[in-house]
Picture 1: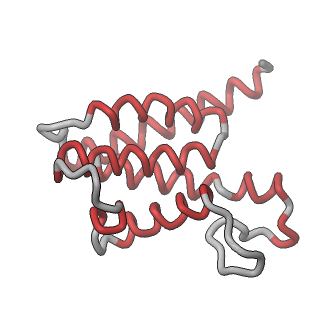
Picture 2: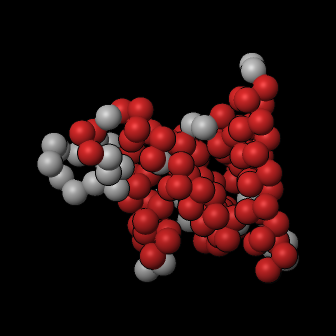
Length: 142
């Protein structure tokens, strides 16, 4: 690993910490925490720092869902769409996660394929902001 890669990973780690601190400083720590969500959060940090944006988004949605199921509802059967309710951020997170996990027909409206020419590398890089948004939503929810 070269020093530039270490610098990028350190910068991402600092951003991750600041996103957590922003929510913690605003509302404090919740009284109940989902052990499953906390376990997933470890991998989210690793994925985010490595630049694995798709993994970050999918895992952030999984952590939110775990918290809803374990802490908020004790409901392990209801679809996440119902659990998340009308919250626009949670709806976006679920929709982008679903699109990443289940391909759509060509020409369908997309939250993922936003880069002209559908260049794979550029599309993956363009998901960084979405990964950051997913982490912020996750921290606000957990």
